[in-house]
Image (cartoon, rainbow, N blue to C red; front, top):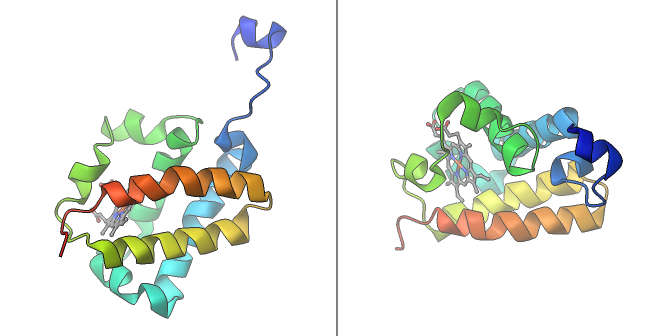
Amino acid sequence: MSLLDKFLPRKQKTLYELVGQEKGTRQLANTFYDIMSTDPVASELLALHPQPMDSIRERFFEYLSGWFGGPPLFEQKYGHPRLRARHLPFKVDQNMIDQWLHCMNKALEQEVKSSRTRQAIQQAVTPLAQHMLNCPH
Ligand code: HEM
């Protein structure tokens, strides 16, 4: 925290603060992959992921940390996320995007109590997921 922040506290909290900092962000990332691993609706999405997913869980948490306005852990370790490019080796069609968003919406319902915070995350993540489309058919 800078000296300025001490005297001029920001009114607007970051999503990172709203979801419960490191613990809440980690929990959201883990619940997301727990749902992907068990919900039959997401079986094709799960099949796309190399197993085991331990390191993907960690990298997704690190990404969310920075994306929510907390410590930019992913960028510090791996450089600019280039998220779309990272997903190019995988066939991402509309069905995959729908399954991904299904898991995320379910994880948000489980982990984020405030409906305003949930909606803010949903509004931001939906176009980002749509942006991963690399196989339109
Ligand atoms: C919408 C459809 C999506 C599909 C089908 C998908 C699929 C995948 C797959 C298969 C991996 C494993 C990559 C590997 O093992 O190297 C992965 C990794 C990852 N995904 Fe996604 N993803 C989607 C959307 C998203 C979104 C919206 C985000 C961010 C909010 C995201 C963040 C990540 C991150 C950070 C990793 C780890 C990347 C790395 O370190 O290389 N993904 N994803």
